Amino acid sequence: MAHFNSVQELEAAVGQRETSEWITIDQDRINRFADATDDHQWIHTDPERAAAGPFGSTIAHGFLVLSLLPALAADRVSVDGTVMGINYGLDRVRFPHPVPVNSRVRAVSELSKVETTGQGVRVVTAVTIELEGADKPAVVAEWITLYVLA
Image 1 (cartoon, rainbow, N blue to C red):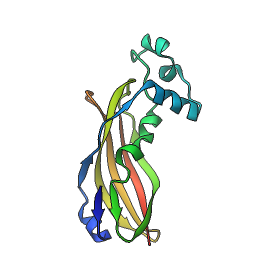
Image 2 (cartoon, one colour; image 1 turned 90 degrees about the vertical axis):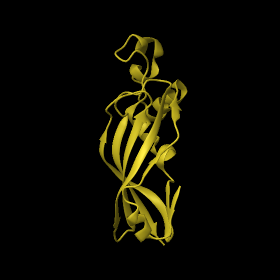
Image 3 (tube, helix red, strand yellow; image 1 turned 60 degrees about the vertical axis):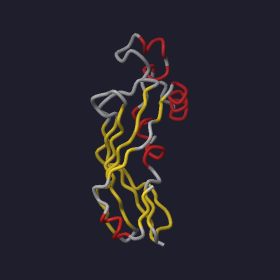
């Protein structure tokens, strides 16, 4: 985790990159996400049918991979003088490559922008979720976090 003593230190870190550890996306995780979202499309939950389908196996939901951002990239920043960080939103989310079952993903995050607002400090992080062995990423997005000032 990167710790910053001030907002000015955080601003000076724009351009800093971090890479997370790998996370494996197995069928159990895919099935639990399908249950949580009521998205049981066969390409995600029917291994037998999916084996004969366009991807050769089940694939993770794009939103499942995106939902791993907290595990992959959250809590990477702390700033003195703030009381919490909250999700503010996402921009430019894309899913360039499917994630086959039992694949490993990791996040490469780059601090893109720091802006002080009336609400606190808004931080934009460019996130690329890489898929091990693939030539394209699984997800690319701009993740916006709001750090609320004390």
